[in-house]
Amino acid sequence: MLTKAPRGTNDILPRDVAKWHYIEEKIKKICTNYGYSEIRTPVFEHTELFERGVGDTTDVVQKEMYTFLDKGERSITLRPEGTAGAARAFLEHNLYAEALPSKLYYNISCYRYEKPQAGRLREFHQFGVECYGSKGPAVDAEIITLAGVVLKELGVPGLKLNINSIGCPQCRSKYNEALKEYFKDHLDTLCDTCKGRYEKNPLRILDCKSPICKEIGESAPMLLDYICPECSEHFEMVKKYLEASGMEYSIDPTIVRGLDYYTKTVLEFKTELPGTQGTVCGGGRYDGLIEELGGSSIPGIGFGMGMERIILAMEAAGVMPEFDNTPDLFVATIGEAADVYSMGLIKKLREENISVIRDYLDRSLKAQMKYSDKMNSKFSIVLGDTEIEEGKAKLKNMATGEAVEVELSGIAEIIKGR
Ligand code: ATP
Ligand code: MG
Image (cartoon, rainbow, N blue to C red; front, side, top):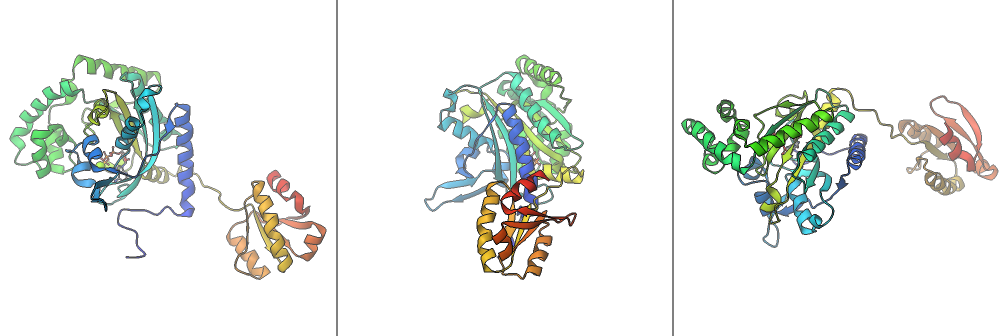
């Protein structure tokens, strides 16, 4: 128990953390180029925020949230996604009074009580983007393109972009009637959760993961056949902008998305990873969200991308680069004077951006060199009384075995020059 992390969580060990840095750096660069700024919000929020913002007929809210009462008897939930928190912060800090649209991105941990498997965790990480304040289809295309560029630059293989329109509340009310009519004859067969959804939000049945509901849903009427002229025009423009951006896409009329606040455009990026874990990115427009949370009628759009799934897909395809985190230099010492002196020398070298390690276990010289080998140091020097006196030492290139005498004050320059 004490030495085992809770089910569905992962440690990111030092040997793997460079992969995360690599992806995070790419994300930061691309988001900056697209004019998005990072936002950081709390890991937990009031439960009501997610009930409202995600929707109380969704799988996430009905089955997956980590919800508890804190010591002040408030109902608190660990964020299952990033949009609700970002939207709350947007309202709380009056970001709508600044230049619109408000273009935000985040890189966060999320929490969902799910059955853990490859690419499905209870603590996972999401990179996401939010854009509030524009109802026009150009931003739909912008965020879809941004997501596609991130995935492409990371080399995620076999990418497929699927888009759909799920209309506005007006077209959806007509569609809901048609859905109810269709599901009426299947009510007894639907799972218990979907039986409850039938009255409240029949659209959600189409997003159910139970195989029976899925099968029944396959022959249900398609929302795309029910969208109003305005939503249809919006969708046509999204497609035009995507084409102008050179983005290949398919239309998948079955995409509904798991969260209640979506309107109009919805999107998914899939990879070749098996099963539902193949979806690395999901998102869409949510013009009703900000109003639902108590703000004025401000449209929004965004997506969330699963970091663990990206890493899985990259590794499966062998496109994850090798990262070098080995130290530039190992400083070995003989005797107390050199031991003390080395601390000052090492500090200076580190200030010159050289990564330096030394022994901290009172090892013999032979054991120090063994340790240096184990750490894969690129260079090493041995400091004794003579070296300190003369201000010189032999700098050994560990790969070639070649050793040259250097001034102690010139070590950094020589290492940088290699
Ligand atoms: P799924 O259908 O796989 O359950 P979802 O529709 O619940 O996904 P979203 O809420 O749209 O997922 O989240 C956006 C992205 O976050 C997903 O496309 C996926 O890459 C990732 N994601 C979602 N849930 C998990 C999880 N439990 N573990 C790891 N990644 C996840
Ligand atoms: Mg899910």
